[in-house]
Image 1 (tube, rainbow, N blue to C red):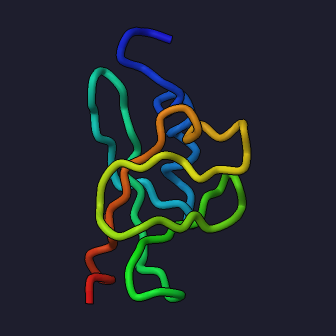
Image 2: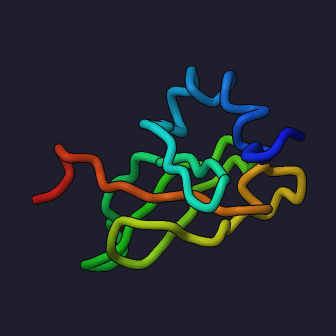
Length: 95
């Protein structure tokens, strides 16, 4: 891979079209790209975020707040495993 690339840039073409895992942009930090994944609120507790991972075929559950997270993937081939992702709560879901 070229300088400034990571696995994210190599598979993002297919994920952009995904209806289950919604990538809404990318954040660059220290020459790496991190996908920004649109999340919804968890229903099982009063706080936290969730999104459906197309690589694991299950929901990933995280604590409260937008920002970078380590991957909760169970699929060791998931490109999220190396560098994680950035979570952002859907604007329509902020009630």
